[in-house]
Amino acid sequence: MELKLGTKLERKKRFLSLLTTDLNARLHLAALLLLTVCSLTATSCTSKSNSKSDAFTINLPREIHSVDPLLLRGTAKRYVLFNVHRGLFYYDKDNKISNHGAKTCAWSSDKNFDCHLADKKWSDGSPIKAEHYVYSYQQIKTLNDESLTAVQGIEEVLAVSEKTLRFVFQQKEESVRHRLTSLSLSPRNKNMVFKNLKEQLFSGPYKVQSLDQKNIHLKSNNHYDSNNRPKVTGVFVDDPSAALNMYESGKLDFLRYLESSNIGVYPNVLFAPFAKLDGLFLNQEKLPLNLRKALIYALDFKALQKLYKSPSVPGCLAVPKFFFKEEIECFKFDLKKSKDSFEKFKTNDLSQVNEIKNLKIHIPSVDADEHKKLALWAREQWLNHLGISVQIELVETKMFYEKVQKSEYSIYRKAHPLENLSCTEAMASLKRESEFSKIKFTSKNCRDFFKEALGSYSWIPLGLPYYAHLPSKNFSGYYINLLGQFGLEDLRKIE
Image (tube, one colour):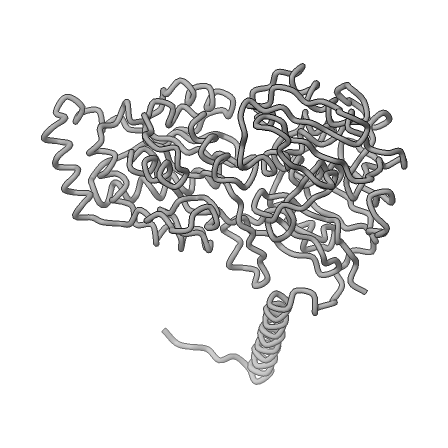
């Protein structure tokens, strides 16, 4: 085929086009290098986005109908309620317990835990008293919501005096301060469930200024301390792609969630670990032990880590390292061990060999894309290494959890967010669930409990999960702790 170079003028145009393209590429590379430097020196880069607002703007996944800490769950609780409600204690940016409403607390007997309150005020300037904490306990008991686990083991909450609060426990607990970080136990200015903003007061560094179907606006609570913080706006955006477009156009200062497929595109990604017991669960009643072992050891966990582009180490226990003085050994890819276990399964469990043809991984419809990516990876691993073909079934979220509770699925994806950062709470969380409710644990020691849990081969942990965010160029001082709580008490605008 003859290559036509064209006229002299056409060749000149092509040369100029290539020169322009090369120049653009160099400029793009320079921009990427600058962003990389910014990500390594978080507060030293002061370049401005297109946003003209003085408010710190973030995206939230769905509309918030209430700002009552007893009525909200998930992201809204971690991002909004953590900043407008503060109780006796809270976790700071270093994941350490900080006092807020409590001045001093101590056990006055084997059952009584007494707290002397600090001089804190509501957002209207009135004092926060012991009775306001009692109102929280009374409302939790009235709602009788099983998900509000903070009061389990508490027999009574009493206002001994205006500034002295007493928790009466069934027995003495070492992790009591961790328990009392729960937002559900933060004070309430009335003994009622709040359904509108007019009657509710706030005890956190921010107060809710307004709330509608599109936005929630927060204003600095001047009675929390003397700091005058920037305003905060939460925009309700369900679609991650739409939120990313808003961030890129300067309409958001902080991107709450970046999909794993986009992580490699941005050099300044902020990874925040989140303490939850995350993994694939193998139903021990439906899957024999040797089959469970075969399925676990057939997974190349390093390949999964590359797929998610995450610092997390799959196969390892998904709890903070400070839970144990000595780490628990992770599951590792071992094809020989996997095939040996698979052969034992086929020899010893003849009646169930045909059942593996019907194996399914069930995943909830919420965050389906991320769940499906994991399920597709596991299916490919089992097909390539064991010749097992597994189907993937997406289930409506409410139905999914109902069926999991009834132990109807053989393999499924589930996560257990922790209520606090104590090993005791993590152990209790797992014991409450159907996955482990039928395992007879012999140890009360937290580390030994988790060793037994992994030794049941009923759980494929995915490591401590890391969520990817895109940071702000205009604001600093925010943090995300291990409970996923978005702390804004030190928020400031970069001048």
